[in-house]
Length: 131
Image (tube, rainbow, N blue to C red; front, side, top):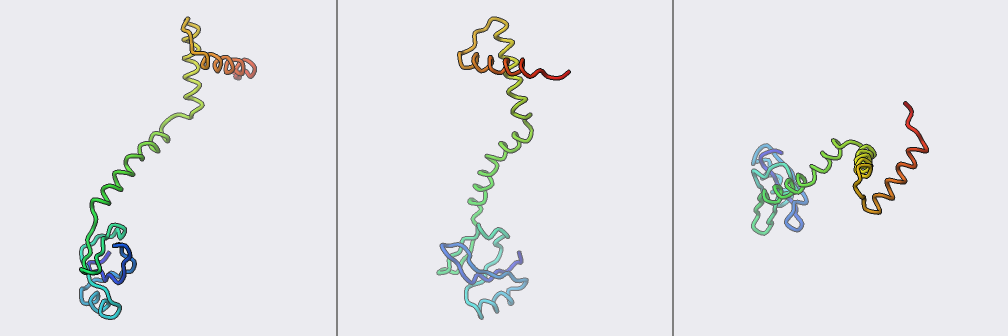
């Protein structure tokens, strides 16, 4: 984004039409021809520009950008974990093996877990893993 911005149109305090320029003279010439006003130092992320056409001011909503960054960061860990975790089948296999060891050691499983473990063991017995 160049230093000088001709704000030509806005809607709901958001920029709708603009053009950026290297010099203030170019921006002022554009505004003289198409209307609007010249702003500086707004940054490149136009979605955070706050436009007040009546006062002919433009500002950068850093708090909104910071909130968006924080919201994204709050869920990024889920994708990071998903990429790092072993496959679900491996996770479940490890859990069922542990539950089977618990049961063989005399621990009583709840009925749902006991029933599910019986089905898993029956399937494993039916389809043996090759050596």
